[in-house]
Amino acid sequence: MPVTAYDLTGRTAFVTGAASGIGRASAALLAEAGATVHCADRDGQGLDETAALIKECGGTAHTHTLDVSDRAQVAEAVAAAAAPTGTLDILAAIAGIMHHSPVLETRDEDLDRVLAVNFKGVLYACQEAARTMIAAGTRGSLITMASGAIDTGGPGLLCYGAAKAAVVQLTRTLATEVGPHGIRVNAVAPGWVRTPMTTRHDETAQAHTEALMTRLAPLGRVGTPQDIAHAVLHLASDASAFTTGQILRPNGGVAMPW
Figure 1 (cartoon, rainbow, N blue to C red):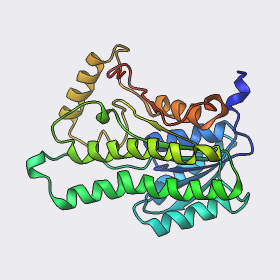
Figure 2: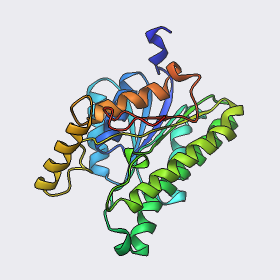
Figure 3: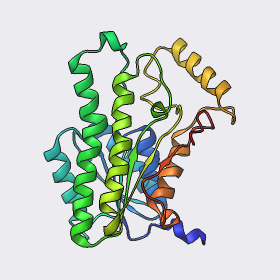
Figure 4: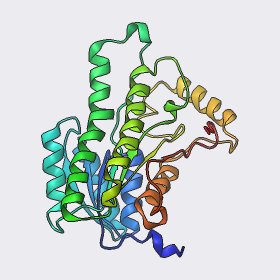
């Protein structure tokens, strides 16, 4: 297939979590490939910085400040993004939060908040984008963000891992339901990536984790947001036209599930 399969000129993308990290890198790369990118996040300043970065490189970006755990806000933003052309072509539901607590110390409010953002936020975005695509007859691509946590256990990861496992189930189930409409649904499950979310811990713990992941990875390094953005671009483009219901794992080889 020619390289032009990655050309997104004339397409509209909606990216959540676009204010930083993987979301920012993905929004920028989709724009570089030619898409008009609607950047969504609760961090308005970060969104402005992402949009400025895209525009400086000659791309087109719009911003939507919202809380992905609020269904009404997501619906309003998706409708606004689709209004100029009548549809969306790409959704990248990347917004997420991290939480650590031992199982025996996990509170209802911990689980509720993580599920609200990391699972419901993805569900709401997928529902709104899929409805828009179906109504317009668009053969689009929905991309969800899972995690390497779906393949491993680890202390403190109950809430985060459970939410990401739910995202995988959503991805597979939705793929079977919207496939007849020509809509593809796939997940990206990154390994350890250095982002603002993963570097909020103390420096000693951060260095220990990165050293461990570097030793475990056959490629001998941790990931970058750009590594994951390229996976998002692949799934957004025609290069993955025969791919749906799949979990793409850019993780340096740390996990190799069958």
